[in-house]
Image (cartoon, rainbow, N blue to C red; front, side, top):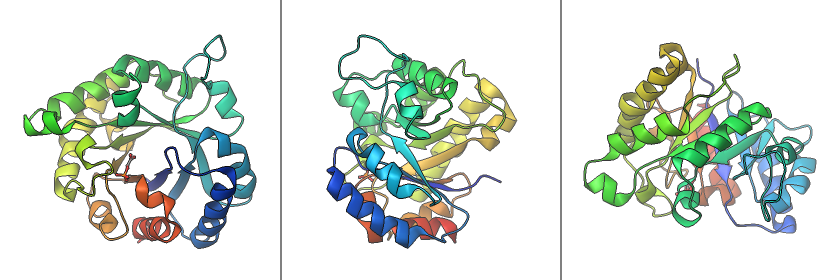
Length: 252
Ligand code: PGA
């Protein structure tokens, strides 16, 4: 049985004070929602403040990117060692990083290996662009992203790896994939690609989230699909009532 996971990707939103306010609302609303792994991924600058507020709750904390080296002359970067002091999860390979900041399957692979080496749980994002979707290349693109991004990992026995399938055309557009289509990509492309790398058992153990315009009103449809294990939520994770309702949908 795979435990559902709902992660909020706050992107480049929230000052420390704004983050505090949101976390206080979330911690109250999410207390006692059982059976769902809940993760907040706020900006780096707020991690310490958010971490203090999450103490004693069952909410996990994550970052939105990192470098793969443990330290070095990499101006502006943050290392896995630094993150491991603060949080347990890290989003890697988000399409915004791929589109705007030159992230590639090769750098996603380096980062994923580094995250695991330093005890972090990587949430690795994959997904096709609109042009690729329209050209019928979803399977090819997503399969490649999984094969290259996740190649050669040393996976601990408790299998701390999460994949998020996020069609780029669905992110921030209000145009979510249908739950059936997202499930089919996960069942027919992503799990088989993981099976090709790590075997059938790993393919069944890995949690695969859907992301892209998930909100309170559509979350349950996704969670009812057999191969979707939760959601990576962007815009709706900034509104406490929406995020709480999405987590509740994952619990029921
Ligand atoms: P969205 O973003 O929920 O705002 O579409 C999802 C994501 O980027 O992870």
